[in-house]
Amino acid sequence: MATASVHVLEAALHGSVDPLASELVARLRQQAPIRARATRPYSRRAAYELYQRKAAQGDQPWVRTDGYPRVLATLRATVDGEVIAHGVTFADAVYLVFTDPTRQLCLGVLRKRRLVRGT
Image (cartoon, rainbow, N blue to C red; front, side, top):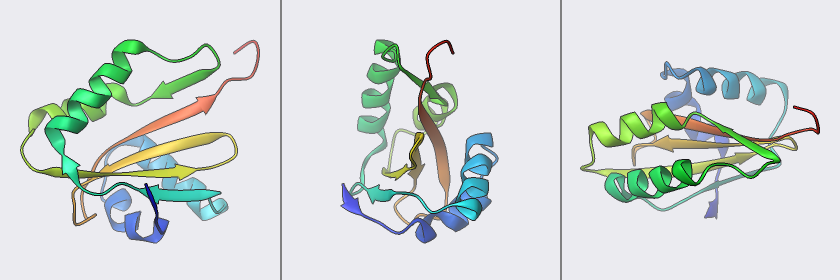
């Protein structure tokens, strides 16, 4: 993943109905991420297969990932074309934002959170 600016995601995030996209927009208004990175465009089919496997494997006991159903449904609906995955890292969570190659359309968001003992 190459370093990326979160500003290139703003249009896609604002146009999304995904609740995790709205949450990420609010977080970006309050604090800057520690790191933002992006992949090169790759096929939606490959993205679907990769994240379907990750969802099936499940999380580690200390991590919870939210958003798989919405992301997988979107990627499965149209497996033709390409996708870019953007990792936006905060101290307590990582958001993985999937966009079209132009970064104008948010295809979905995953949120990985480190759990505190007892949650």
